[in-house]
Length: 309
View (spheres, rainbow, N blue to C red):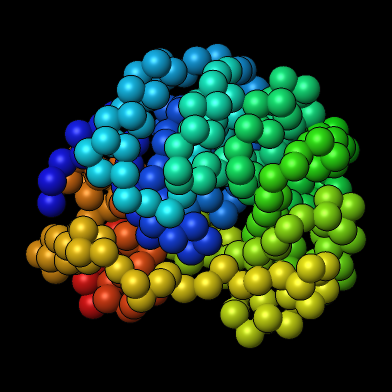
């Protein structure tokens, strides 16, 4: 496995919704406005609403240009990673640069900062914006997403509506459901009613595929997700399995990680350090291997260890 030559790019990685996605990470690890109980990268270590240039924008753009010249093979260029990209004060400058490229750009955002006009303006430069809605009022927002103390659900949802009213691109909505927390039919109906106000182009139902931040967060069975999908308009799609159309690089990376796990159990941090990979990239590959039942995960002393089957 070749080490990643970039500081701010990772992948391309296999994505359930975006095929081969090149990740562009604009914040330090787990710098976010939320601390979602289901986050598969762990708990938020820096919960903040402070917007600033967390990483140098010019250096990010230089890396993107270099990657486009030396590789350039991906289905989407995605502002994502291990934190909330809209916290970066100049994420719009990165999206503006991506608009001139042949590969479509995506902003993966929790939507909490879309109440700010400058964030809405910057986000509108993406060709696809995926926002999240997994709650229906302040109490459920606090259960599921554990927001920054200055965030309230009403302002958050109003920001989503205001963005939808000005955004001419594709708006995709992710609804993350957790057994016993927000997946009861009555609660999902409340989320679905709110989603209709946003008029999304696509809706994806998602649930836990890798160990979450909190061990009480449990997955919803696929058959139940399929039953709930019809409550949405348009009908929701289930976050499908990874495509069988896999590149040699992706297959090689999976095999290398699997070989390491056959030797000894490792945490996601062990694998990240061993291969110099981005933690989000490691998480994607672990998700593939878990789905293929080639590895299993065990939580020990608040750490999750992965072992080959």
